[in-house]
Length: 284
Image: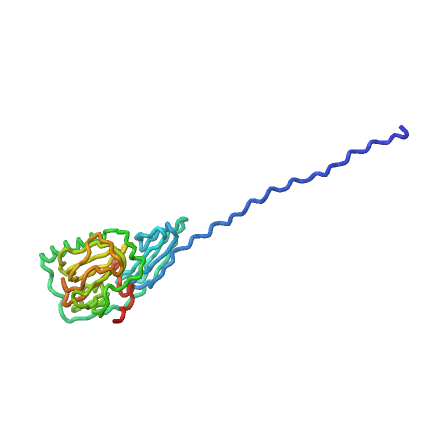
């Protein structure tokens, strides 16, 4: 129809795209747990300290090693340890780390003698000695809560070192037993102090055939001290002793040719050198 105006179209409404959802935060993967850290000299007769994340399992040459709740531990190498040891760490996250430890050899003091080794022991000696060795083995099997293994060891007495760890005599080509500890010559009655905290695991009630009056102290984690040839013992089995506490006195009981202290250290089956733990003998 003339003069009619077509109705206008309704205005278009602009469509707004929905906002994207916020991006989920990216959580980085957890950092891998560190493996064991070892401190100390890797050498025959030596002891080293280790730290690892709490809950880590430590295995040395196929045998489990005890660890503290915070992951600290110790390992040691026997006087006759081979050139290598294998340390395995099974971390709490399940990863397994293997490290080959190079163990440095040592030049031991060897004395060649042109005489025979000696006569065979009598049946009576063997009977008595067997019981003594049983007592020593039973003592070493005792586990304690001692924490001396965490300390720096002190010399139980000071004086002239008259016998070195690891020294050995050879009788007409036949090797004798090597010296299992360090001898310190001092007059009989000289007080002997605990080199570190520990628990008494053996205090002989009579002199042993070789060791004489024998005292053994456990320092924890399989580490223990033995004190031989004492003139007296001032502590009893089960006593907790502190580093520096007087535990006995020098003597010459058992197989000894003069008054001295024989101090030996053992970690599990490994005999270790007291000189490496206590350091050079103090002067004076």
